[in-house]
Length: 257
Image (cartoon, rainbow, N blue to C red; front, side, top):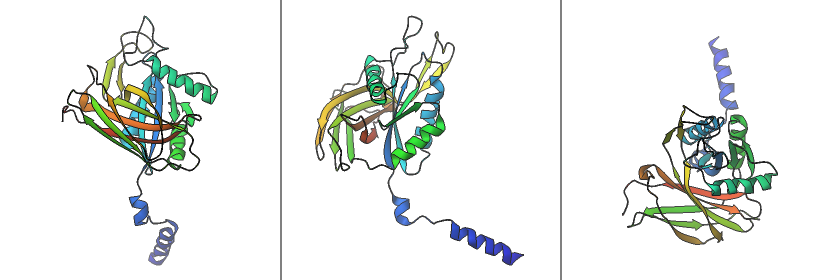
């Protein structure tokens, strides 16, 4: 009996490939997920919870998930106005709608500018992120520091690009985690909503090329919790909308250093 058990174990060992040192050391490919959401939408909190979980757990070993949650303004009403909503976020979603030939909707998750799903469809979203993590990406390096006046100084450097990449646009965002809102009216009345990766700032910085470095300054507004801020920079093909590369860094709460 002992001999039979050992034989079975031996077979199983040969069937399971062992990771090489190179595979263990392989860096994760950054993938950008953009959530279009609203506090006025009763189906959005589930998608936001899922995005927060993805950021916290990073479930795919070859992928580093980076999120920018953009609150749209078309759900705003006299009954309830989302404090994080922006017409710019809505316009960005409309550009995706034209690309995907679909209507705007919430909660929508756009993965690397290539695919979109209802944000609560976990299996489909994770599969899309997995595929995105297998694609070649541009090399991007982001440096962020506090300026003396409390603004954020950014330096974004672009390295090599995948073959066949078209004209690129540089985008920067400042996101905030740990936001909590008690909703008093509307579809989410009586709920305490928790938000992560909320876009406090998102803006295009014009065209950029390989091996170029761009410096920018972002003004920090009153009410932003400095300890919870993160800077995201990504390059997007102007024509296709595909995200070619993305990086993000955290910011300490200490300004003026």
